[in-house]
Length: 64
Image (cartoon, rainbow, N blue to C red; front, side, top):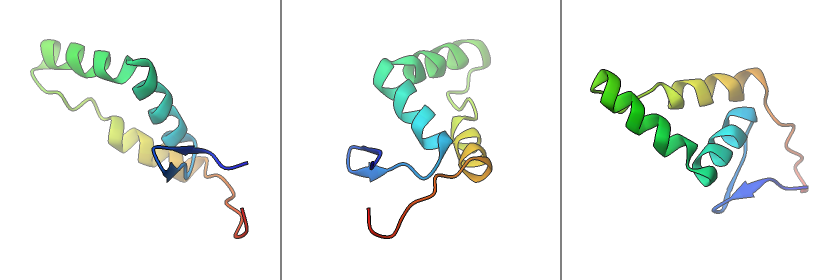
């Protein structure tokens, strides 16, 4: 089974979590709260996504 979102295939758990939080609006909410509290919109999501992808990669088959 291919896991895709807007044409991009998930490489690991980080991508899947990112897609879910984006689709549900949680990511937008977190960025807004973080900006209100710290003054910075960057909450570390991108670094966390990359780290989770490295720790929990999906085994992508050549012939999916």
